[in-house]
Figure 1 (cartoon, rainbow, N blue to C red):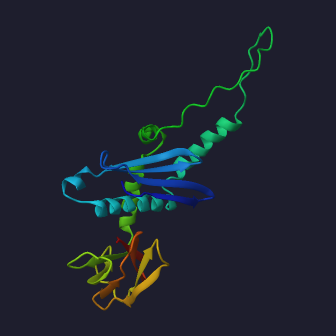
Figure 2 (cartoon, rainbow, N blue to C red; figure 1 turned 90 degrees about the vertical axis):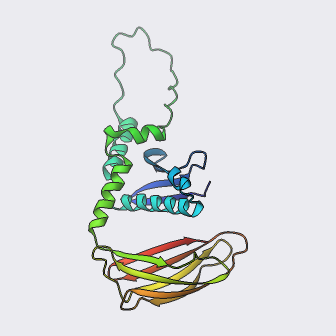
Figure 3 (cartoon, rainbow, N blue to C red; figure 1 turned 30 degrees about the vertical axis):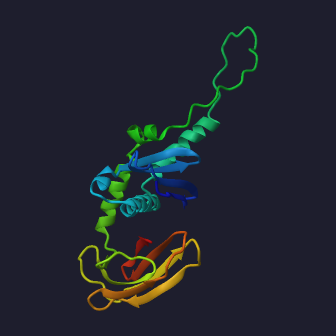
Length: 249
């Protein structure tokens, strides 16, 4: 079971908590849940049994988990959950500030004060995911967001190399930058490679710029990691915006 992601994201003065986790090999799925003030707003589960059948391992599962988490955060920022947020906040305000029920008409005497019954159990993830009558599901929201995103031109980075990057050795790789729409190479993209580690401060391993063909040859001397965990962040900046590649070490 891999370590998941927990992110608090502020959107229009509302703070949502997004949790994405790996359910483990016995139940191979990536599950993301959006919480609003402790209540489940939406949930998404993606099975990855097919990855295991193809012989894939932690690297591919971690990439799937990160992609799903980042996509949900982007969809929140794009306003794809605004309707569901408004509905959830409206339901809560009605429950907290609605009118009190009228007392019985001919009660012979006031009944003794009674304690309120315990609140119903919190909506389960499964129930929230199936509540289609309250609006589109999380899968539908993400699909709509990706369709909209695909129509917008943005920077794409691709890393090519004969071997995967490993700490403690020199890796020679080629970074290619191009447009998502036209596929045209993107020259003059400002590229930086940073190493993040749980044992040391972030450090810049390399900086450069893509040439006229949209490529940059990288020679990465990645330091060895003694215990802990580390990752490489390869980022590019251009007139089309920014893009990143994250590589776990």
